[in-house]
Image (cartoon, rainbow, N blue to C red):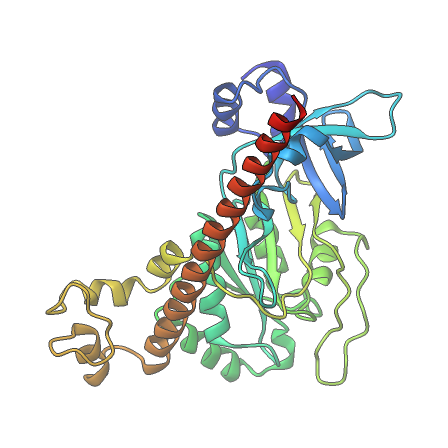
Length: 360
């Protein structure tokens, strides 16, 4: 690495990005990391500090789909003049990993959550929020983006030790073997364990519903009040306070991305993540009589046999079928949309060409 690259290591730069920068011809450009996105403005950081930036017009013209826009955690090429109010972003570095979901509502497209994340901290409350099916959905999304998952079970102070053990047993019986850390922001149990997990130069992202204690945990880990939190209700449920994704650098050099509470998220292009989260079912599928078995009613289906014999949990199987069907449906809709977009693009190009001919 050159001296500039070494200065960027504190923000997560490594040899992988160094190699990609040389491949794209960006090694000699001014590089910075996206800290936050506010509509058409971005907050980026480099060795000199934080500054505002906007997307250059030429770069905007090259963007093909929403997922190509810079998001929190991205590395970007920036032209910056201290006399200007904004830096100008001309390119985005390839992503080493990513967290993305299907856009909310009827839109069939990707929505980026964060990029270049090393570990995703999936947060669920032991009290009101616990849901194994939702946990499996998070794990599919995380693994699909080549991010390591860790599960945080918060608010242990609101349940008995017996109830906590039941929740842990439910996670394991669903075939989930991801590391689980139990903690309470009230008693401090488990907070030190999370702190020890966070390594300098690595990027972590908190994922979970509103009110599970994500912002409070960040305040605990930082040792100061850097994020607003709201009063907890009588049920133990917190209130949503985070309004934007933001990369926060902790005192020990680790970077933590806070994330607004996710109310709903669909899966799109998640086949790899489903394979990672349901590896036990995929292993059983190799023993099915038919290679294209749908595991619904075919004779000789090893998955259904395991289900009937009690070797496969019913809820785990049903969630697999649901997530796979949802992903396949959205994937097909996305491909159809892309075909239409390309056809429309060719039409616009032909019109521009004709107009150019007429002007001659």
